Image 1 (cartoon, rainbow, N blue to C red):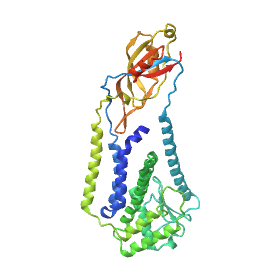
Image 2 (image 1 turned 60 degrees about the vertical axis):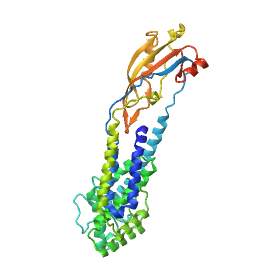
Image 3 (image 1 turned 60 degrees about the horizontal axis):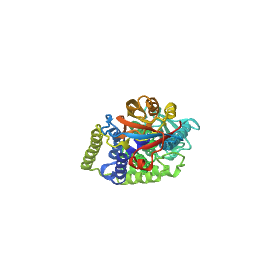
Image 4 (image 1 turned 90 degrees about the vertical axis):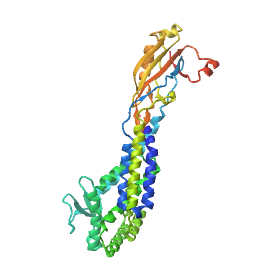
Length: 411
């Protein structure tokens, strides 16, 4: 998993940086709706960067060599385990925080809330409840959505303010924004270690609110914009800043941007929209083509096959008693999960003395998978030579055979 995450970082980081910059600098020229739509590039990029690829064939005929001696067993440390555990802890913590925030909202719909009727026409699938802990209207849920409004909503806001604020939540409802928010949270949970992920999540949610405001106020008058802005400020003043990953009313930067956008609406330039679409298509096509271009690989460096778990072969008792030395050359494949299979004995000397123990040990070895384009690849045709030696090679031999790794095993 760690290898796959690392392989995604360059492409994802570049795209997130572009989208964050566009949200901050180009929203006046492109419009909030266009910027919001451009966030779809993130999942599309992940798909393009992870298109299926072929098996990696090893053309190099170099042989990995390991010296098997009689002695104390060496310890092999699997460093990838700790990184996987650290990533899992971070992911689990974020998902737990998100679940806790959603649970708090769900409790508001069940405890201290009551169903209310609104003068605005609502979809039949949408239930409306009021609660005194809310600062403003909030849409909760994906499959069974609930619209929560603050207690005294009818008295705190004018009729026109109520209509505009409810319309804002209905835009969220019809666009299925809560589903996109869940996908965005899952993205953050997977790539939590990248700081750009957190900045992008904030920018995405700000852009979402700005796009809703633009849809609501598209045909509105100046008086409506002023009234709506006052309602937003009032909600922000009453926000309880509850523990949640994001609050559309408690987040000051978002609120300032929303009011500024209402005051000075975007002057959309069609030419720039066309350019952004063209660049986006080029980016996705480039990543996909680069990924497909890697479907035929030749691995010419033996160091690419790096064992992370190596079960040490045992020196056969009979061979040790007879002071026999020898070697076994094996051919094997590395599966996508790093395990070995298709093991065959190519050569052995003396024959059948060390074969069984060599195959038994190699079956339990685990390698670091070879990653291309974010996908683990199966490697075929690798070879390894196990040299069984009774004595430790002298210094001259070690210098001549510096690429040979020693494995000390118990008799």
